[in-house]
Length: 103
Image (cartoon, rainbow, N blue to C red; front, side, top):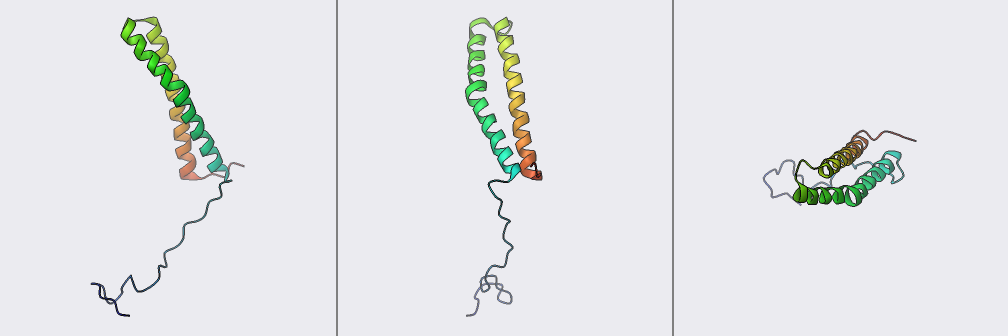
């Protein structure tokens, strides 16, 4: 069978693909388990802790304004929770890129 494409001398469609296969990673790899747990924790914290705090902060802002003590307290809680979630997501990124052997 002859190739009728523009690169007839070395047609990529005539030969079977010889590209290297990606390595298979076990679901039990320590870095993958740790990253999955961290991501799950960050998601749950965001859904069940961070989002309600932000909603309460918006309500406080509408009721009492920026200068209220309630708003400031919620702002500090929001910043602390958001920072913890950011650190967790950055740790997941680190684990996915470096793939360290943890245990």
